[in-house]
Structure formats: structure tokens, C-alpha cells
Amino acid sequence: MSESVNNRALPLQFKGRPLMRKDSILYYGSMSDKYIVMMQVLDSAKLEDIKLSKKVSVQLQLTDPDISSRDRVVKSTERDGLYAALDIAAIWLERALSSK
Image (cartoon, one colour):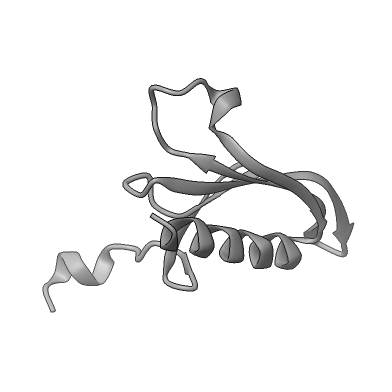
């Protein structure tokens, strides 16, 4: 492989879909699809030197930029912990994208 490919960081993925983080917000899915999931860490706890997510808001959203941000939300819930949030996010996104 070329030097530039070896040095480029691969994007983080979960179950074959992109997972991006900006501060306390995680975006799951691709903006080129009809839907994406936004997860926001609402509460966290410190365990030694690691910060653990305690309460996470999960929203299935339309990616259409012509719709107001409030009207983009299709489903929402809160989950305890990041794993539970990612689990429901993967289910919702898979179902939403397969029912095109």
C-alpha cells in the first residue's frame, strides 16, 4: 500500500455503518442515507481515569436539510449506557433504511 493510505486513520464503524463523535454527541449512519441516529450523552460518571456514559438520548432523524431540526426527529428515547444506546440505534437505523 502507498504511504498515504497507511497513515490515514480509518473511520470508526459500528455494524458496518459510520460512527462519528463531536464532544458529547455521536452520529451513527451516513448523511447520504435518508436517516441517521444522533446520540447525546446526558450524564456520565468517572471510573478512575475513564469517563463512562450513564444516560444517553437517542434520536432517529431524517437527513433532509429542508426540514426543520424539530421536524427531523422520527423517534426518540433515553437509554442507560452507551452500549444500550448503540443497540437501539442500530435496530432503528436498520429498520428505517430497509423500509425505503
